[in-house]
Amino acid sequence: MIAILDNIRSISNVGSIFRTADAAGVKKIYLGGITPEPLDAFGRPSQPFIKVSLGAENTVAWEKAKSVSRLIDRLRKEGYKIIGVELAPGAVQYNKLNLGKNLEKIAFVFGNEVDGISKAILAKCDLITEVPMAGMKESMNVSVTFGIVVFQVVYNS
Image (cartoon, rainbow, N blue to C red; front, side):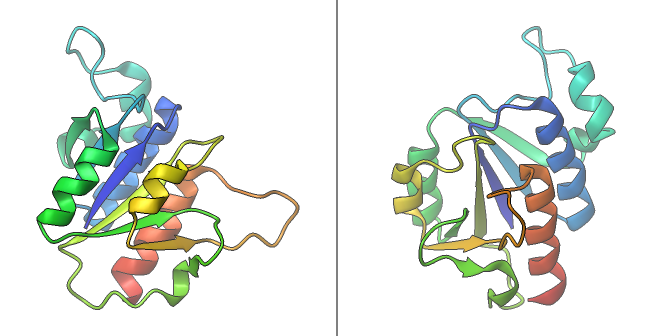
């Protein structure tokens, strides 16, 4: 299983996602658009990042992706099933996903904290899943959503 982070703004969210990805055995994380990298502009470890990730950037493979759209096209050709995680019409609840035990060719897309996944990227997804909201808020923190979805898939598929 791999993850695509599409224009996530917060370095703390990204660091937390790396740490959770390590715990869940996620193979690789693609950092799309403005998503912060573990390294600063001079190639040094970013202190705000590693404060949260606790070194998971060294145990989870990662790569910067300038275009998430082109990345999805490439991954699809490699046989990946692309699953967007977004509150959207027709989305399947995360706990009702039936992906089987072979998670090697699954790619989850997580979007921006304010705008979510863009409509253009959602249209490229094979499936959309969501974590239902029972309260007044229409979303939760992307790093929390990442943990919920990834651990559900790893331990309950």
